[in-house]
Image (cartoon, rainbow, N blue to C red):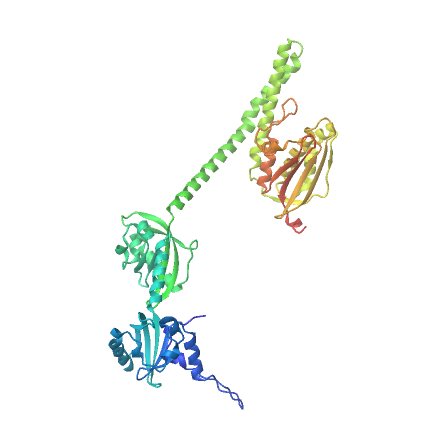
Length: 513
């Protein structure tokens, strides 16, 4: 919906009603009197509207006279306009009125009226003479208000931390702030009146001109973030990246575009550093993957040979040499075995974060049963009891989910005080479209001060003689859960068992449960 300013209205638009439609047969259609329509427009105007007769007397005055001149319409109607004009502007105004009588439209004519307190109020006038109605129509806009708004606007522009400039329809710079001076190295007097292309590298000016023309056809705001990234040219010829936001402003002189200019050099440098860091990280990951392959083949083969021959020495020469020899051989066998287990766990940890297999809908209950099959020997030897049932489908890597269950249940079986291990596995809905799994045991428990520590690499709470292991198992669990977009934690007290909880994303099949 377009709003028409009062200063743009013609006399006919102020007082003349739209042509009335022909009434239906036998029916009379009543229209509002012309005076009522004219009065409603005058009443609503914020500008000073005056209807003046041939002799220069006020016929009608808008209520805004009170706000602008402190006179009510009743105090002005019937009196001569000359009595309200500033004396120095009287003859000039009369000359303009005579010219208006000869058919020339009064446009942007400045003449002062006298405020009730005696001071001069500058007004900008537009008006026409209606020969048919034998009267003038004038609309006066308070220049003090316009000047105040202009000062306020310039103050806002100047205090803006971003560069701001306004450009005319012809592409000439009308206004700049201090930040533009700082960004481009020009003084503002060197920019005002110049083509905005001065701030664009020469090789890009043709393209910039076509972009300006295309924008002029659309003439709609382009906010920052949706703006176009361009290259700016400083006074010394150096170039720098900028982002531009544009806002068209309609004025009496045409459309002026207010541009906000942000120097994004630092952002570009940060983005380049981030890309370089990502490349370095990618290369590092590739090197780690290569190391993992080496560890799984080249390192394990000689280690397997060392372990095999030390075990052979232990079997063949146990009791045939002195006690020290038996002890030394046992140390060698134990060291080689632990090194094998450590390398295998490190490989599992490095692979836990890989994204080789895409997440898919899997049965968590089936993944648990695979883990229990792998733990068959430990369950049989300890007499452990594992309770579960009705576990949901989730989005997961099935192999890693089985490994997650295997590590947590394996720990529940291992960390006992000699009793029969009892493990309960369950799942319940959690916020954010997830399931929360809990694995509760009756083991030795964990001191709360160690809750964060146990998920780190090589973190052991017990001596190797008490419980075997490398201290990597829970770190692997944490990495698997996080790779699946979940979170893992523990609740426990020493001597009262532990409950490990972790979340996984629901599958579509169970998303409504």
